Image 1 (cartoon, helix red, strand yellow):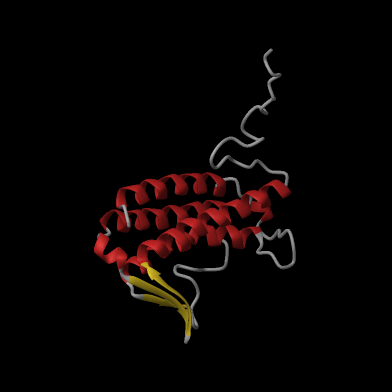
Image 2 (cartoon, rainbow, N blue to C red):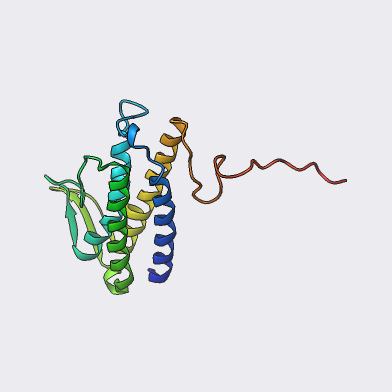
Length: 176
């Protein structure tokens, strides 16, 4: 069952952490990729900045057909770090506005992601928000953290401190 207040709280928390991670993307490394099959840093960061915009079609449309289209609000060209944060902030603001007004009955309705005749899934809207927005953001934010680490850049904490923003934890000797 969908609990709007809980989802909005979680959305706010995850978006704040994601914004902090995006703020560490360096302008001079946007074309870097860790492997030939991987997205560039700029592509990954742009995708992450766009993902919150998926809330809108999930809440307003019955389906999204990717056949001949790109993801919502997509432009594969990276706007650079400042533009990434601006795009992310706009998408988060609109998504949050829509989430706070979402009706429980509407969120129980089915929503479909397809590409032409190929249906990827049909799920209740609340589950699409969880999987294709929140979990998707968390997944790509973790990827971005790995990219930052491979570039020997600071990695901000998500659910606790990282080696970059705290003193290492030293094991305590057992007390006798």
